[in-house]
Length: 150
Image (cartoon, rainbow, N blue to C red):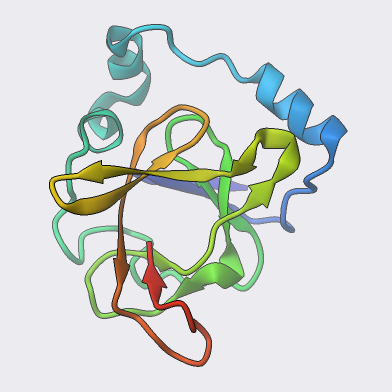
């Protein structure tokens, strides 16, 4: 079962198996839109956040308080697995937050990329370059020693 939201979707299953065969097949089977017009048609109302870097209102995201124990969160535009369910943690910021992302050599490293964005660090999907949010370094805890909040 997969639940789709604005910037991520959630699959209720075990973590994806990151082997050369499965990741190359997954990467080659994804047909990404060639133009922004095609992205707009494919994403509908999610286009503003994913392709134009928009922001949802705090507390409005359906995954804000959703805390699964198994499964993974994928890019809302291209379905690339981004975060395991166990990387999600509770925060009072108003948006879903994660402390680490998937990394696989087969897909070229980290599944989440960064770029500078008006003095902040924007995070994007490394496959389709869709906007996922920003990185903040304000959530230090025993469970999150690097303080990252994606």
